[in-house]
Image (cartoon, rainbow, N blue to C red; front, top):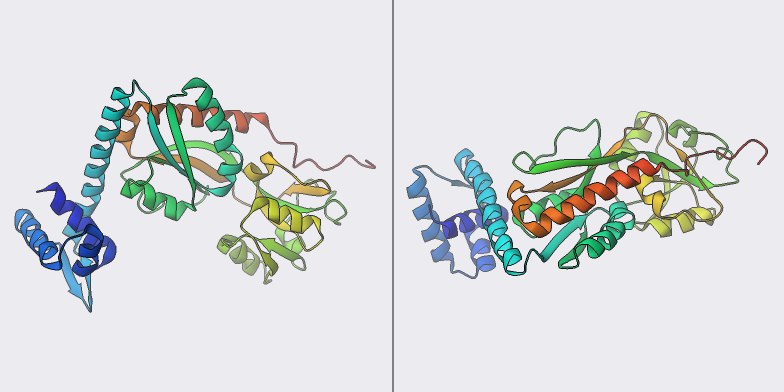
Length: 311
């Protein structure tokens, strides 16, 4: 099998057609068709079948695409390792991370990595876990900071990649200090059935939990910036839910943050292709990220403590 033929296959799988794959790769459509015929002849089995006006991978096609991703990962690792050796261990590390890790973990990581390894450069792109996973699989990012809930199964697409657990954090209710529930050590979601909510766009789990409790949440604002959420809550517009990790960075004056009871912990982890650990710059970044996450987890937050009685 030819590496270029594997690239054609992965692009056909991604776009769903020879024509679209040709446009992305800069080939003609007949050239893509020829490469696919040669690859199917080498494999000895069909890799795609036509479904309606599009193409769908066969089982053999899915297997080959999965291995192609791993092959491309090895090639990228080799390319970066060579560049790192040439640069005496330095190099570029492309990180993709979810929002609250960009606010809390990544600034510390960049500072510490810059002090310990000034030859290592870092770029950061914010993305939700689904998009981050795709960027890592395709090699558009070297490693990712992702998160999921402790009771969830392994997300699809991570089976062949390396997953390094970093820390867990809780979900908090964010409200004004004069809210009737602000004096509680913890808050139950059912107690907020009549509340107005300031929430992020990605809130499927929150809506499902409210539905299971028998109410539809009244969302009065949709905001995807942590400081904007806090500002709106502080104005009296409503209450919100935020991760413990995001609240480590900053809490607006006048706000109370209380742990949400009966809610699963969120797990933060690193995701990368195993071969990327052979790249000196990536390995250095991984060490600093893991150490930073341990420091944050060990620090222990004070944001969840209710004010003393009469205080």
